[in-house]
Image (cartoon, rainbow, N blue to C red; front, side, top):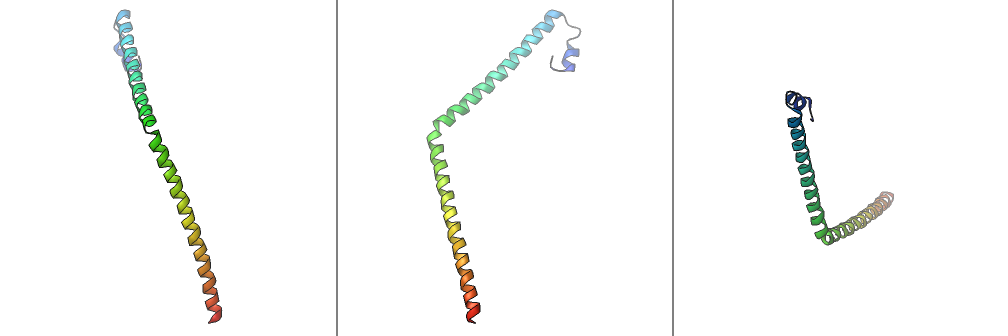
Length: 93
């Protein structure tokens, strides 16, 4: 039903056998769909259970990124200051 090989294999069978095969195929596809939905529901539930921790972690990450930006600003300011000192030393020498 889903491929030419399947269709060829059913060619010599009665309409009743083909209909039964089609129903079995549909049953298998529905089972796969239900299994996939159950797995997605399980993932959703686990995310919901850990939502508080996930939010705490996100806020901690935001804070850490803010601290890194502050460190970067300090380093850039220090670099600029050291550049000024180097120019003063060159003039003084």
